[in-house]
Image 1 (spheres, rainbow, N blue to C red):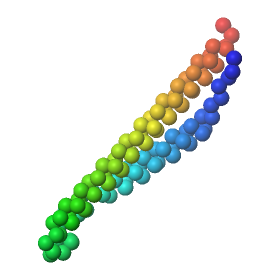
Image 2: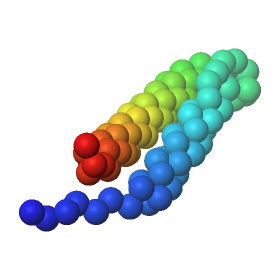
Image 3: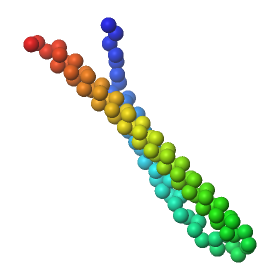
Image 4: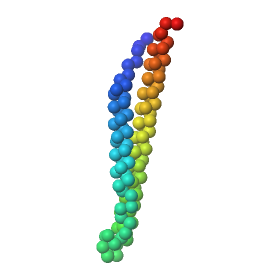
Length: 101
């Protein structure tokens, strides 16, 4: 029977890195919100309102995409944590099963 080998240190490093990246994506997305609400920042031209609307739409899309990326990375972090916990629990159970009865 083959013995599975797990590098728990590598899994923890991966989980920590994913967690950090999720936070960074979330912070970037938070910086997008409502930066271009006033059409006057684009001047007094007739198209200022249209430019403002387009920039607002882009701003909202950017915020949504970064939020989605953060959510996916949080799910990856959670999955890695669950894997790590299961491996540790299985290792402990196996260790306990080898104790003399």
